[in-house]
Amino acid sequence: MSMMIDTGMTALLSPMILFFVLGGFAGLVRSDLSVPEALAKAMSIYLMAAIGLKGGIQIAETGLTSQFVLALVAGVTLSAVLPIPVYALLRKAGGLDRLNASAVAAHYGSVSVVTFVTGSEILAAMEMPAAGFMVAVMAAMETPAIIAGLLLARSAMSPGTRSPGPAIWHETLLNGSVVLLVGSLAIGFAVGKEGAAPVQPFFEAGFRGVLCLFLLDMGLIAARRLRETRNLTWRLVALGVAIPVAQGALGVVTGHAIGLDTATSAALGILAASASYIAVPAVMRMSLPQADPGISLGMVLAVTFPFNVIFGIPVYIALASRIGT
Image (tube, rainbow, N blue to C red; front, side, top):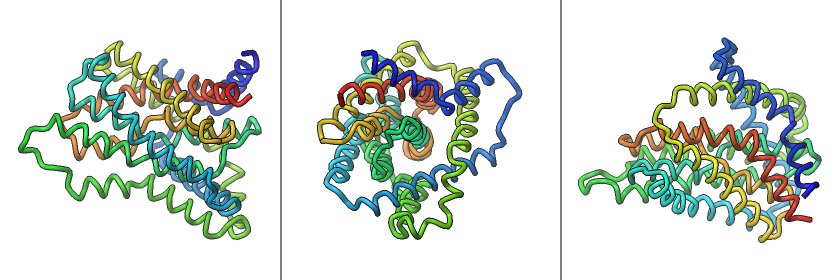
């Protein structure tokens, strides 16, 4: 138990988490601290390209192993299945109608790139890096939850409602984050370590510093979203904490069950616990315009994301370390 607490505290006191806390504090006290939108977008592109390139290089070095295949199957299965119990919880405990419960469930089945990158860097800083193929697993976990959410929503639609058209599937499969992650992963896999050597210093030297500044901005956004949200009940706030804890624990246990090492099991737990606030909202806005985005973004961005970054990631890492001993 002592080792589990020590592991959690080490992760909790990382610079990445503390910068997020600083941004959250500045937002809550209404400081005029801000990060220009163009800079925030540039940092997001840099982070996704860097993590994709790194993952591709590592896959090129290790090859397509059985562990990679098992992790990929586990990740896709979790993404497709998790929206179902979340939907039931939101209906019974959260008091949401079927349409909003479907939309929110899709968010919780999908993944947050920023949460994963933060967790990966904390693991690396603790000298227990996760396997590089988890970047591919993360990219694969974006879409199944969206499809599951849309299928759940069909029962709430009137008979005359049209099914999602080509634009929805285009947005689902070819949204910017997926294209950039998969593309940079493919580039890293194609060129390998030697081929990427000329650009490697750019993507490695400033990565953690850029991540700290990006999380500072995310802290500001989360705090402001929390201040502005008016339609979150205490039951939904409680679910915004309980759902990621349960999903994170399931991800960690699943990782150990299929033979992943401690760090990679923790990474799978972080992915399972994270919730999308970029790709899924864009799709839901097009396919389920009747759903209230204030509920889904309020839960995901104002409750779950801050919880995961400050407390969840350390808990999932500590749990994986505990099970792995």
